[in-house]
Amino acid sequence: MSTPQGDVTIRAARPEDAADIRAIYAPFVQETSISFETVPPSVETMAERIASNLASHGYFVAQSDAGILGFAYASPYRSRPAYDRTAEVSVYVAPEGQGRGLAQALYRMLFAHLAARGFHTAVAIVTLPNPQSAQLHERCGFAHVGSLQEVGRKFDQWHGTAIYQRMIGQADLHSAVRRVEASDTVALAQVLTLIQTSFAYMTGRIDPPSSMHQLTISKLAEAAKGSWLLALGDPVAACLLATPLPHALYLGKIAISEDLRGRGVLRALLAASEALARSMSLSRLELQVRLELVENQKIFGKCGFIETARNAHPGYDRVTEITMQKTL
Image 1: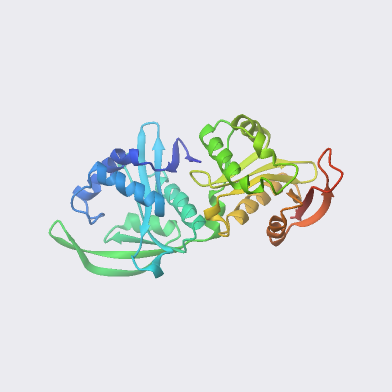
Image 2: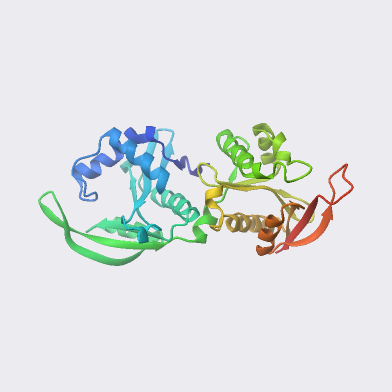
């Protein structure tokens, strides 16, 4: 899923973006001390970096019709295992993209990505002096926690660095929940795959079978027109379908990728749903859980939902699902 920023879209980087990203980065290497690299990486090396960081920490670009205007990525802060939940972050914006809030937008997506993957702290290293970068990082919630003097030599001069730190948390997840539009076929395809993968364990456990077996991209697109298809991540790693009813906002198709479970992603989706319900003057969230899926009933119970009814699917003379509600 991508996130719009005016006429620019923030999306996950791809290795094939390497040439455009290098074109932005090379002048920072060749003409400034902002980067401590002294020779711009090749396109091939940049593609390798993108692929590596995508797999481990995250890499995003600001894409316009004219091309890529900026990028942000996270990488390991230190190699020792105790630092595994700390990431070093960087952001670069081309001159023609500066002054448009793209650096902040890139960082927002990156922080949400890090939060969903259990990272605790982000660290940014800023070459001194660089008041524009200092102001940017402070606007993005970083605190200046220290400085090092004369640690890098470039252009026959010694340069110090400032260390900025920002904690990663639930607020970063909440800000990244977005609505998927019916026209966004790429995101819809990702949602469909996520639902099918996440619901696969129900096969053979529940009766009647899950409706996900009849779900298609076109059906999701139709649902997204009258409901709010909320999602998080690029590619989509969590989703739910919120449908307004006269008495409550009904939540269905709740799916979270296995690697993100237990990291606050469900609570972020529910918080977005609560805000949506309040904007519609609805005082409850409602969902249904299959009778056999006791573990899911317990999860939603911990999120404030209580059982309000027991129901049978058409053609069944026994209880097959439980209705649960949360009062806002």
